Image (cartoon, rainbow, N blue to C red; front, side, top):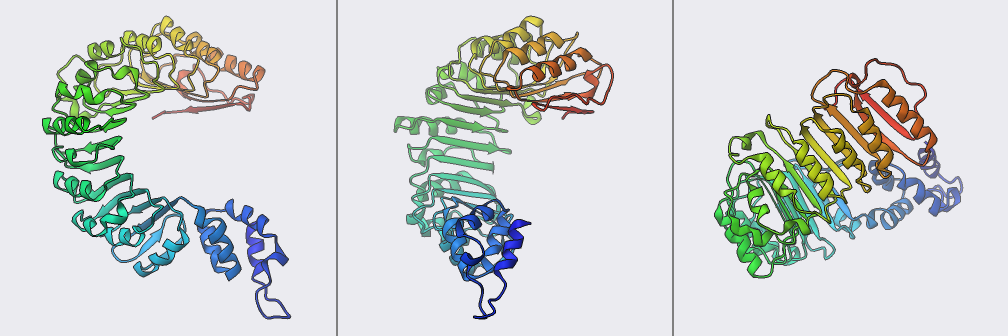
Length: 457
């Protein structure tokens, strides 16, 4: 409201000059910038239309310094996301390019033939990231015409139609010579043309939904590795693999690993991946469960026999009938002592000793135990985790059953603890049926954000 008031004030005509009043006579420019920065992007961008002084001020002090330009479009016109800027024809891209001259990230969503838009911004020496999300009729061959400017791009993320194929990857490799982070969603890649990427590549993400990565993928990775590639991130979510144990040499030094095909663990077991990993995410896909013939819990147990000194984030979501066993959770608690974030989905009954081991993980900030078989009352174990994990700021518990499995005393013990320890802050999510009765709690400490749901998804 305050900003709107000043917007109107500056539009008042000066009685003596019949022109817009000087902005500095109404509000100091420094204060105006602070007010505008607190507004939504749509209000900031529209405020340029107030007068030339406002336009120059906003462009030079706000828009010009923005590092990301997000555009959405249709087959003819485009709209700026969250800017409420109705329609900007392709010719107007040039003015946008001048305004966002410092932009390092160009994000295009819902474009038809996005290459035309890319050409307008491609001569910017500042541009380092290019994201195409749900874009249609993307032609990789036309990129060759703007090869030189795009040579600066280091991050490329594609979710386009038609799906990216191995032939497209070859064209991309020819156009983006400084590529370090490469993501393809909804792709149709087997993997044999990945070898044409530059060995400086650090991150590869292939979200493949209709083709199996064959041994040619491993061959490409090995060739890049021989040329000097040292991969740091590998994302093979929703992707079926024809595993080849030769890939173990490529996995060495990996920091981020996300996969959905459990057979991948067979290769990981043969590598020294445990020493370098910072993040592991295994999200099982229903469509891939039928291909899993290996004993899942045996592999998980063997995998976490190793110590993971640098692991900060671990996420395991199983969608089969078999849950994560007590033995596996204990090994995680014992050998991943430096975890900051732990998400486990589909867990069998955990012993009190396991809850105690989790409570010894002093760096833990985020803990989610979802779809867990609580068995008997686990109030003591959970409360012990809350007390001992002094950095814990988020706790989510979801049970497999809807019968009460926590004593009501657990909630009141939490109230008392957070009331006596105002320096601690926590967001806690529980299902209402955890408790033997429902009451309207009126004494919840301000530093405890307690959320009780009828159903926690």
